[in-house]
Image (tube, rainbow, N blue to C red):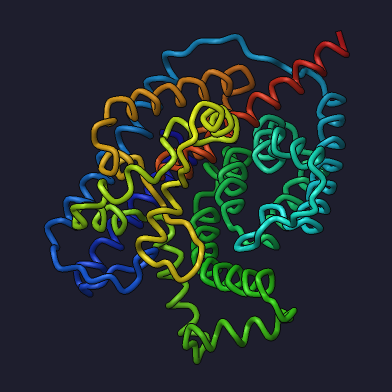
Length: 401
Protein backbone atom coordinates (compact mmCIF):
# COMPACT_ATOMS: atom_id res chain seq x y z
CA UNK A 1 0.00 0.00 0.00
CA UNK A 2 1.11 3.55 -0.68
CA UNK A 3 1.26 6.25 2.01
CA UNK A 4 -2.28 7.58 1.77
CA UNK A 5 -3.92 4.17 1.59
CA UNK A 6 -1.81 2.82 4.44
CA UNK A 7 -2.70 5.82 6.62
CA UNK A 8 -6.46 5.50 6.20
CA UNK A 9 -6.39 1.70 6.36
CA UNK A 10 -4.67 1.92 9.75
CA UNK A 11 -7.05 4.67 10.89
CA UNK A 12 -10.10 2.49 10.25
CA UNK A 13 -8.39 -0.60 11.66
CA UNK A 14 -7.29 1.29 14.78
CA UNK A 15 -10.78 2.74 15.30
CA UNK A 16 -12.41 -0.70 15.18
CA UNK A 17 -9.86 -2.26 17.54
CA UNK A 18 -10.01 0.61 20.06
CA UNK A 19 -13.81 0.81 20.10
CA UNK A 20 -14.12 -2.98 20.48
CA UNK A 21 -11.83 -2.81 23.54
CA UNK A 22 -13.76 0.16 24.98
CA UNK A 23 -17.11 -1.59 24.45
CA UNK A 24 -15.92 -4.81 26.09
CA UNK A 25 -14.41 -2.92 29.03
CA UNK A 26 -17.45 -0.69 29.61
CA UNK A 27 -20.11 -3.30 28.85
CA UNK A 28 -21.90 -0.73 26.67
CA UNK A 29 -21.79 -0.17 22.92
CA UNK A 30 -21.46 3.37 21.56
CA UNK A 31 -21.86 4.85 18.11
CA UNK A 32 -25.14 3.99 16.38
CA UNK A 33 -26.01 1.62 19.25
CA UNK A 34 -25.22 4.01 22.08
CA UNK A 35 -26.37 2.49 25.38
CA UNK A 36 -26.89 -1.06 24.06
CA UNK A 37 -25.65 -3.63 26.61
CA UNK A 38 -22.69 -5.81 25.66
CA UNK A 39 -23.24 -9.15 27.42
CA UNK A 40 -21.17 -11.39 25.16
CA UNK A 41 -17.52 -10.24 24.92
CA UNK A 42 -16.54 -13.23 22.77
CA UNK A 43 -19.12 -12.25 20.16
CA UNK A 44 -17.65 -8.74 20.11
CA UNK A 45 -14.23 -10.30 19.50
CA UNK A 46 -15.79 -12.33 16.67
CA UNK A 47 -17.23 -9.11 15.21
CA UNK A 48 -13.77 -7.51 15.38
CA UNK A 49 -12.21 -10.51 13.62
CA UNK A 50 -14.86 -10.25 10.87
CA UNK A 51 -14.05 -6.55 10.42
CA UNK A 52 -10.29 -7.16 10.21
CA UNK A 53 -10.65 -10.08 7.78
CA UNK A 54 -13.10 -8.16 5.57
CA UNK A 55 -10.83 -5.08 5.53
CA UNK A 56 -7.81 -7.04 4.38
CA UNK A 57 -9.87 -9.09 1.89
CA UNK A 58 -11.62 -6.14 0.23
CA UNK A 59 -9.09 -3.32 0.45
CA UNK A 60 -5.76 -5.10 0.40
CA UNK A 61 -6.03 -8.39 -1.47
CA UNK A 62 -9.07 -7.95 -3.73
CA UNK A 63 -8.60 -4.29 -4.68
CA UNK A 64 -4.86 -4.81 -5.11
CA UNK A 65 -5.35 -7.91 -7.28
CA UNK A 66 -7.92 -6.25 -9.55
CA UNK A 67 -5.83 -3.08 -9.78
CA UNK A 68 -2.86 -5.10 -11.08
CA UNK A 69 -4.97 -7.33 -13.33
CA UNK A 70 -7.08 -4.74 -15.17
CA UNK A 71 -5.15 -3.13 -18.04
CA UNK A 72 -6.61 -0.22 -20.03
CA UNK A 73 -5.33 2.70 -22.08
CA UNK A 74 -5.61 6.02 -20.23
CA UNK A 75 -7.34 9.19 -21.42
CA UNK A 76 -4.96 12.14 -21.22
CA UNK A 77 -5.50 15.89 -21.21
CA UNK A 78 -2.04 17.09 -22.05
CA UNK A 79 -1.90 20.85 -21.55
CA UNK A 80 -2.84 23.39 -18.91
CA UNK A 81 -5.59 25.00 -20.98
CA UNK A 82 -7.65 21.81 -20.64
CA UNK A 83 -7.34 22.02 -16.88
CA UNK A 84 -8.37 25.68 -16.99
CA UNK A 85 -11.61 24.78 -18.75
CA UNK A 86 -12.23 22.06 -16.16
CA UNK A 87 -11.44 24.48 -13.31
CA UNK A 88 -13.96 27.05 -14.54
CA UNK A 89 -16.58 24.40 -15.28
CA UNK A 90 -16.35 22.99 -11.75
CA UNK A 91 -16.46 26.40 -10.10
CA UNK A 92 -19.71 27.14 -11.96
CA UNK A 93 -21.03 23.65 -11.20
CA UNK A 94 -20.26 23.84 -7.48
CA UNK A 95 -21.69 27.34 -7.05
CA UNK A 96 -24.88 26.48 -8.93
CA UNK A 97 -25.27 23.17 -7.08
CA UNK A 98 -24.60 24.86 -3.74
CA UNK A 99 -27.23 27.52 -4.42
CA UNK A 100 -29.74 24.92 -5.63
CA UNK A 101 -29.07 22.65 -2.64
CA UNK A 102 -29.62 25.31 0.01
CA UNK A 103 -32.66 26.76 -1.74
CA UNK A 104 -34.45 23.40 -2.05
CA UNK A 105 -32.85 21.45 0.85
CA UNK A 106 -31.03 18.99 -1.40
CA UNK A 107 -28.69 16.65 0.47
CA UNK A 108 -28.89 18.52 3.77
CA UNK A 109 -28.50 16.17 6.74
CA UNK A 110 -31.79 15.51 8.53
CA UNK A 111 -33.86 17.72 6.21
CA UNK A 112 -36.48 16.52 3.72
CA UNK A 113 -36.18 17.78 0.16
CA UNK A 114 -38.45 20.72 -0.73
CA UNK A 115 -41.52 19.43 -2.62
CA UNK A 116 -41.41 22.43 -4.96
CA UNK A 117 -37.95 21.57 -6.32
CA UNK A 118 -37.73 21.93 -10.14
CA UNK A 119 -37.37 18.43 -11.58
CA UNK A 120 -35.11 19.13 -14.59
CA UNK A 121 -32.17 20.68 -12.67
CA UNK A 122 -32.74 18.14 -9.87
CA UNK A 123 -32.34 15.17 -12.21
CA UNK A 124 -29.42 16.86 -13.95
CA UNK A 125 -27.58 17.16 -10.64
CA UNK A 126 -28.55 13.60 -9.68
CA UNK A 127 -27.03 12.32 -12.91
CA UNK A 128 -23.87 14.41 -12.57
CA UNK A 129 -23.32 13.87 -8.81
CA UNK A 130 -21.39 17.17 -8.34
CA UNK A 131 -19.74 16.23 -5.02
CA UNK A 132 -18.28 12.93 -6.22
CA UNK A 133 -17.55 14.52 -9.60
CA UNK A 134 -15.51 17.26 -7.89
CA UNK A 135 -13.47 14.72 -5.92
CA UNK A 136 -12.66 12.92 -9.17
CA UNK A 137 -11.74 16.19 -10.90
CA UNK A 138 -9.45 17.16 -8.00
CA UNK A 139 -7.66 13.81 -8.08
CA UNK A 140 -7.42 13.79 -11.88
CA UNK A 141 -5.93 17.29 -12.18
CA UNK A 142 -3.80 17.21 -9.01
CA UNK A 143 -0.50 16.89 -10.91
CA UNK A 144 -0.47 20.65 -11.62
CA UNK A 145 -0.86 23.24 -8.83
CA UNK A 146 -3.44 25.91 -9.66
CA UNK A 147 -5.36 28.55 -7.69
CA UNK A 148 -8.71 27.50 -9.16
CA UNK A 149 -7.99 23.93 -8.01
CA UNK A 150 -7.81 25.23 -4.43
CA UNK A 151 -10.97 27.32 -4.91
CA UNK A 152 -12.94 24.24 -5.95
CA UNK A 153 -11.61 22.25 -3.00
CA UNK A 154 -12.66 25.02 -0.59
CA UNK A 155 -16.11 25.30 -2.19
CA UNK A 156 -16.87 21.59 -1.90
CA UNK A 157 -15.58 21.52 1.68
CA UNK A 158 -17.58 24.59 2.72
CA UNK A 159 -20.84 23.40 1.15
CA UNK A 160 -20.46 19.92 2.64
CA UNK A 161 -19.90 21.28 6.17
CA UNK A 162 -22.87 23.65 5.93
CA UNK A 163 -25.03 20.71 4.82
CA UNK A 164 -24.00 18.80 7.93
CA UNK A 165 -21.59 16.28 6.35
CA UNK A 166 -17.93 15.71 7.24
CA UNK A 167 -17.01 12.97 4.76
CA UNK A 168 -15.49 15.64 2.51
CA UNK A 169 -12.65 15.92 5.04
CA UNK A 170 -11.72 12.29 4.39
CA UNK A 171 -11.70 12.64 0.60
CA UNK A 172 -9.94 16.01 0.57
CA UNK A 173 -7.31 14.89 3.10
CA UNK A 174 -6.67 11.84 0.95
CA UNK A 175 -6.30 14.03 -2.16
CA UNK A 176 -4.08 16.46 -0.22
CA UNK A 177 -1.70 13.59 0.60
CA UNK A 178 -1.70 12.51 -3.06
CA UNK A 179 -0.81 16.05 -4.16
CA UNK A 180 1.92 16.50 -1.53
CA UNK A 181 3.33 12.98 -1.45
CA UNK A 182 6.89 14.02 -2.26
CA UNK A 183 6.87 16.81 0.33
CA UNK A 184 5.52 14.46 3.00
CA UNK A 185 8.29 11.93 2.43
CA UNK A 186 10.88 14.70 2.84
CA UNK A 187 9.22 16.27 5.89
CA UNK A 188 7.79 13.35 7.85
CA UNK A 189 8.00 15.22 11.16
CA UNK A 190 5.82 18.06 9.84
CA UNK A 191 3.37 15.52 8.47
CA UNK A 192 3.15 13.76 11.84
CA UNK A 193 2.58 17.14 13.48
CA UNK A 194 -0.22 17.77 11.00
CA UNK A 195 -1.82 14.44 11.96
CA UNK A 196 -1.69 15.40 15.64
CA UNK A 197 -3.29 18.77 14.87
CA UNK A 198 -5.98 16.99 12.85
CA UNK A 199 -6.73 14.64 15.75
CA UNK A 200 -6.98 17.58 18.17
CA UNK A 201 -9.30 19.53 15.84
CA UNK A 202 -11.53 16.59 14.86
CA UNK A 203 -13.74 16.67 17.99
CA UNK A 204 -14.46 20.37 17.44
CA UNK A 205 -15.38 19.72 13.80
CA UNK A 206 -17.70 16.94 14.95
CA UNK A 207 -19.23 19.33 17.48
CA UNK A 208 -19.70 21.96 14.77
CA UNK A 209 -21.47 19.34 12.64
CA UNK A 210 -23.93 18.79 15.50
CA UNK A 211 -24.51 22.55 15.72
CA UNK A 212 -25.06 22.83 11.95
CA UNK A 213 -27.53 19.93 12.06
CA UNK A 214 -29.52 21.69 14.80
CA UNK A 215 -29.62 24.91 12.76
CA UNK A 216 -30.62 23.09 9.55
CA UNK A 217 -33.40 21.06 11.19
CA UNK A 218 -34.70 23.75 13.56
CA UNK A 219 -38.38 24.62 13.24
CA UNK A 220 -37.85 27.82 15.22
CA UNK A 221 -35.03 29.34 13.17
CA UNK A 222 -32.40 28.81 15.87
CA UNK A 223 -29.18 30.77 15.39
CA UNK A 224 -25.75 29.18 15.64
CA UNK A 225 -25.29 30.62 19.15
CA UNK A 226 -28.62 29.13 20.25
CA UNK A 227 -27.72 25.83 18.59
CA UNK A 228 -24.41 25.69 20.47
CA UNK A 229 -26.28 26.14 23.77
CA UNK A 230 -28.79 23.45 22.82
CA UNK A 231 -26.11 20.92 21.87
CA UNK A 232 -24.05 21.58 25.00
CA UNK A 233 -27.15 21.27 27.18
CA UNK A 234 -28.39 18.09 25.48
CA UNK A 235 -24.95 16.44 25.61
CA UNK A 236 -24.38 17.64 29.21
CA UNK A 237 -21.15 19.45 28.24
CA UNK A 238 -19.87 21.65 31.05
CA UNK A 239 -16.32 22.38 29.91
CA UNK A 240 -14.04 22.39 26.90
CA UNK A 241 -12.50 19.14 28.15
CA UNK A 242 -15.95 17.51 28.30
CA UNK A 243 -16.57 18.58 24.72
CA UNK A 244 -13.19 17.28 23.55
CA UNK A 245 -13.51 13.89 25.27
CA UNK A 246 -17.10 13.30 24.18
CA UNK A 247 -16.59 14.21 20.53
CA UNK A 248 -13.19 12.54 20.23
CA UNK A 249 -14.82 9.22 21.15
CA UNK A 250 -17.75 10.05 18.85
CA UNK A 251 -15.33 10.75 15.97
CA UNK A 252 -13.52 7.43 16.45
CA UNK A 253 -16.86 5.61 16.60
CA UNK A 254 -17.81 6.93 13.16
CA UNK A 255 -15.07 4.78 11.62
CA UNK A 256 -16.12 1.52 13.32
CA UNK A 257 -18.78 -1.04 12.62
CA UNK A 258 -17.93 -3.70 15.21
CA UNK A 259 -20.92 -2.46 17.23
CA UNK A 260 -23.53 -3.01 14.52
CA UNK A 261 -21.97 -6.38 13.65
CA UNK A 262 -22.19 -7.42 17.30
CA UNK A 263 -25.85 -6.38 17.32
CA UNK A 264 -26.61 -8.38 14.17
CA UNK A 265 -24.86 -11.48 15.57
CA UNK A 266 -26.63 -11.27 18.94
CA UNK A 267 -30.08 -10.51 17.54
CA UNK A 268 -30.71 -13.96 16.08
CA UNK A 269 -33.93 -13.03 14.30
CA UNK A 270 -32.55 -9.98 12.51
CA UNK A 271 -32.60 -11.76 9.13
CA UNK A 272 -36.25 -12.78 9.56
CA UNK A 273 -37.31 -9.29 10.69
CA UNK A 274 -35.53 -7.36 7.94
CA UNK A 275 -35.12 -9.66 4.94
CA UNK A 276 -38.56 -9.08 3.39
CA UNK A 277 -38.54 -5.34 4.13
CA UNK A 278 -35.29 -4.20 2.57
CA UNK A 279 -34.33 -3.15 -0.92
CA UNK A 280 -32.10 -5.90 -2.37
CA UNK A 281 -28.40 -5.07 -2.50
CA UNK A 282 -28.40 -5.19 -6.31
CA UNK A 283 -31.18 -2.57 -6.46
CA UNK A 284 -29.26 -0.01 -4.36
CA UNK A 285 -28.36 2.87 -6.64
CA UNK A 286 -30.31 5.61 -8.39
CA UNK A 287 -30.44 3.80 -11.74
CA UNK A 288 -30.74 0.28 -10.28
CA UNK A 289 -33.57 1.34 -7.99
CA UNK A 290 -35.60 2.77 -10.87
CA UNK A 291 -35.17 -0.43 -12.87
CA UNK A 292 -36.12 -2.52 -9.82
CA UNK A 293 -39.29 -0.45 -9.26
CA UNK A 294 -40.38 -1.09 -12.86
CA UNK A 295 -40.28 -4.87 -12.43
CA UNK A 296 -41.68 -5.20 -8.90
CA UNK A 297 -44.58 -3.82 -6.89
CA UNK A 298 -43.06 -4.96 -3.59
CA UNK A 299 -42.60 -1.98 -1.26
CA UNK A 300 -39.15 -1.94 0.34
CA UNK A 301 -36.84 0.41 2.22
CA UNK A 302 -33.07 0.78 2.46
CA UNK A 303 -31.35 -1.60 4.89
CA UNK A 304 -29.70 1.38 6.62
CA UNK A 305 -33.13 2.87 7.43
CA UNK A 306 -34.88 -0.41 8.29
CA UNK A 307 -32.16 -1.47 10.72
CA UNK A 308 -31.97 2.03 12.24
CA UNK A 309 -35.73 1.98 12.90
CA UNK A 310 -35.42 -1.44 14.54
CA UNK A 311 -32.73 -0.08 16.87
CA UNK A 312 -34.40 3.26 17.64
CA UNK A 313 -37.57 4.42 15.90
CA UNK A 314 -38.08 7.80 17.56
CA UNK A 315 -36.76 9.64 14.49
CA UNK A 316 -35.57 8.99 10.95
CA UNK A 317 -31.90 8.09 10.60
CA UNK A 318 -29.49 5.62 8.99
CA UNK A 319 -26.99 3.14 10.35
CA UNK A 320 -23.79 1.76 8.79
CA UNK A 321 -24.42 -1.63 7.19
CA UNK A 322 -21.09 -3.33 6.30
CA UNK A 323 -21.00 -5.99 3.60
CA UNK A 324 -20.62 -8.66 6.28
CA UNK A 325 -23.90 -7.47 7.84
CA UNK A 326 -25.62 -7.74 4.46
CA UNK A 327 -24.46 -11.35 4.38
CA UNK A 328 -25.94 -11.96 7.85
CA UNK A 329 -29.29 -10.37 7.00
CA UNK A 330 -29.54 -12.13 3.63
CA UNK A 331 -27.42 -15.24 4.26
CA UNK A 332 -28.86 -17.16 1.30
CA UNK A 333 -27.39 -14.52 -1.01
CA UNK A 334 -23.80 -14.57 0.32
CA UNK A 335 -22.34 -15.78 -2.97
CA UNK A 336 -24.33 -13.28 -5.04
CA UNK A 337 -23.37 -10.43 -2.69
CA UNK A 338 -19.70 -11.38 -3.10
CA UNK A 339 -20.02 -11.58 -6.90
CA UNK A 340 -21.86 -8.24 -7.05
CA UNK A 341 -19.22 -6.60 -4.84
CA UNK A 342 -16.41 -7.88 -7.07
CA UNK A 343 -18.31 -6.69 -10.17
CA UNK A 344 -18.65 -3.18 -8.72
CA UNK A 345 -14.94 -3.16 -7.87
CA UNK A 346 -13.97 -4.28 -11.37
CA UNK A 347 -16.15 -1.56 -12.88
CA UNK A 348 -14.83 1.22 -10.63
CA UNK A 349 -11.19 0.23 -11.20
CA UNK A 350 -11.68 -0.10 -14.97
CA UNK A 351 -13.20 3.39 -15.32
CA UNK A 352 -10.66 4.87 -12.90
CA UNK A 353 -7.79 3.41 -14.91
CA UNK A 354 -9.18 5.07 -18.02
CA UNK A 355 -8.55 8.37 -16.27
CA UNK A 356 -5.39 8.16 -14.13
CA UNK A 357 -3.62 6.27 -11.36
CA UNK A 358 -4.57 9.08 -8.97
CA UNK A 359 -8.23 8.45 -9.69
CA UNK A 360 -7.59 4.74 -9.03
CA UNK A 361 -6.19 5.87 -5.69
CA UNK A 362 -9.27 8.01 -5.03
CA UNK A 363 -11.50 5.04 -5.85
CA UNK A 364 -9.69 3.04 -3.17
CA UNK A 365 -10.74 5.54 -0.47
CA UNK A 366 -14.26 5.57 -1.94
CA UNK A 367 -14.27 1.77 -1.58
CA UNK A 368 -13.21 2.09 2.05
CA UNK A 369 -15.68 4.85 2.93
CA UNK A 370 -18.70 3.44 1.08
CA UNK A 371 -18.44 -0.14 -0.19
CA UNK A 372 -16.66 -1.48 2.91
CA UNK A 373 -19.48 0.00 5.00
CA UNK A 374 -22.11 -1.57 2.72
CA UNK A 375 -23.34 1.68 1.15
CA UNK A 376 -24.04 0.14 -2.25
CA UNK A 377 -26.30 3.07 -3.19
CA UNK A 378 -23.63 5.72 -2.59
CA UNK A 379 -20.93 3.62 -4.23
CA UNK A 380 -23.10 3.22 -7.32
CA UNK A 381 -23.49 7.01 -7.45
CA UNK A 382 -19.69 7.32 -7.29
CA UNK A 383 -19.38 4.96 -10.28
CA UNK A 384 -21.99 7.08 -12.05
CA UNK A 385 -19.84 10.18 -11.41
CA UNK A 386 -16.79 8.37 -12.82
CA UNK A 387 -18.71 7.69 -16.03
CA UNK A 388 -19.82 11.34 -16.25
CA UNK A 389 -16.25 12.59 -15.73
CA UNK A 390 -14.90 10.19 -18.37
CA UNK A 391 -17.52 11.56 -20.79
CA UNK A 392 -16.42 15.14 -19.97
CA UNK A 393 -12.78 14.27 -20.71
CA UNK A 394 -13.77 12.52 -23.95
CA UNK A 395 -15.76 15.60 -24.98
CA UNK A 396 -12.81 17.93 -24.35
CA UNK A 397 -10.53 15.67 -26.37
CA UNK A 398 -12.98 15.58 -29.28
CA UNK A 399 -13.41 19.39 -29.25
CA UNK A 400 -9.64 19.93 -29.25
CA UNK A 401 -8.92 17.27 -31.87
